[in-house]
Figure 1: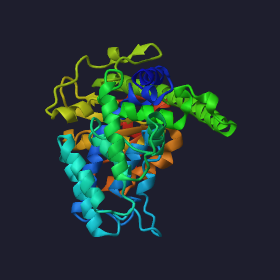
Figure 2 (figure 1 turned 180 degrees about the vertical axis):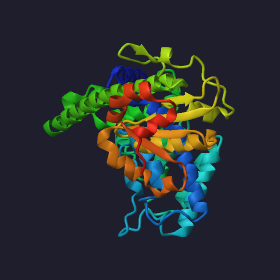
Figure 3 (figure 1 turned 120 degrees about the vertical axis):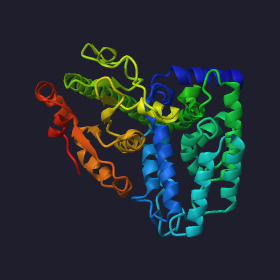
Figure 4 (figure 1 turned 135 degrees about the vertical axis):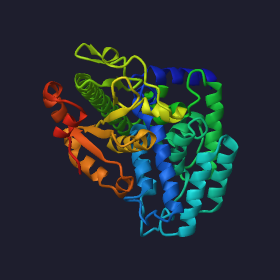
Length: 415
């Protein structure tokens, strides 16, 4: 098995279109998601404690968290479905049943605060013993973003990949089955950690790939004609998704360039996200446009690392005072961008700064809908948005005629 699995892992890592390369590594949205989702889980816990959590998934802080997760696409594409409130079936029974709701909140809080594997596994076993209808190992997708080295995500494709690779018959929707699967995944990951990662997202992505298409194991000759056609459609869709992602990445880089250019022209110290400073647009390197070092801000390490991932920040010249923060969003990541700006406002806000989402024109209605959510409104953070086309078309004029950051109000919109 080890020799065969080593070969499978090599194929997985060498495939430029596998989730290892398109989602797991060199993906700033994945890195940003961890703190955003953690912050969202804290809000779910607070809402349950204060009895502000609604009796429906829609509009809840839990929807907020799951939307951030599903924006990761691929491995987490259907992660929200198990949490939709199904009134006729009364599942998952955490909306109308107050005792179950409180138990779920306590479970999340205890897992959030856990520092090691043992208390998390105890919490899972305790939750399973409560037999809350409809609340199974789909919760693992949330736990993964709280403890990526301990809890792997779980869905149909992953369990199919697991069963195919390990010749097993594990079932979906059962916590005891999940714990057995997890044990094998962790043990296998420990054996191949140098080829994979301490982060269990890497091996989960491997199983996801196997579960969605068997070509990775070189078994395509055994596929039936319907299976082969299904496989061809999956490969075609994946190619389309990769091309779309590359196009969005180029647009993202262009928008960052415009923001850096305007900030410099207005006389601010500007800086791009820490993992973007090697980028360039039309020959203009971000490293030449940005500060060489991030200003010294008095924040805890985790928060500071998140702040450094904000797409573009403008600072008052020669200071560490943030005057404007910009999150450039792709077509699928608007919700998590809002959460990051909200989180940032709690960390550094002193009343002078402004927060902007830079969004694709085709997603304007979605942006307005998201900014109007009760979970956003109650945070009392003013987030405005600027369309890609407006930033691109007016960049030079803003540079030429702008006096300070307030010039961005000329093209910004507010709901």
